[in-house]
Length: 344
Image (tube, rainbow, N blue to C red):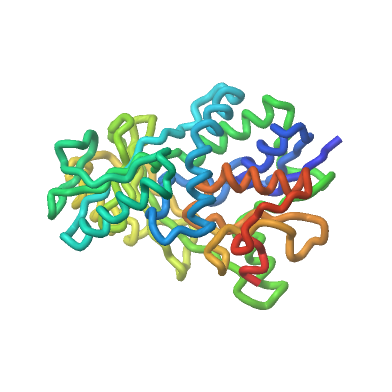
């Protein structure tokens, strides 16, 4: 007996399965390549918010998801019995000039309203910060307490174990049963492109690296377009590229070398750290740049959850909630800009 079949064992598929299971549904997840075989098997894991200004539905949903993430991953860890790797450790950003300082101070004020007192965005000096603190041309920084970190593959493995611990099934092959959700990333975008003979979405290559350096639970750093993310296991992740044109989707190259050099310039202490893993993969990006959620454009009565480009893990908790409501309760709380029609 299966109420919900989820196709795809990345963070969207597993989170939706977990939410449906938590609401009493019998769930089966199917992925021929196994858990976190695609973009969700990455290594960077920066769960960073949009800046607190020019607020819209997408930013609000991301904010709610980031706030809900702590309880979500704590519950997953309880059932899985293994580390999820999630922690809300915050983020440091050096401010390059006085214009950047002025913008940051304006956002400090708007954050008090938009972040509802649940997180803080503040302008500060190096003496106010702990951890890996880069140089700043102005001597000032933004420190926010909403940004979190997660090690993507570890988090997905924990989710899979939690699902199985509560009676869900994860398998590489089975027939569809019950209500069906497609969360297959690039594969499904390419299938829709062929069907509609247009650009519904695309694969964007990303490259990242993992360094052996123990920064404990230090805040992550964002500077010179590079994310530097300390993880729970004595490593620091660096990334990532966003490549729309590429020949070898799963190979790393000189573009990753350039990212590493920028990271070393930001934090010279990392230059002597051993690079223990180089990763490359394809991330699904819907034409609308927002997640693609709702009724599947190709399969009547079935559902889609796709397009989590750069914000997949940060949005996963809210996406799981909205999709479970639609699948199980026939309640549609998905913003119009998240619907498949926004990319068709």
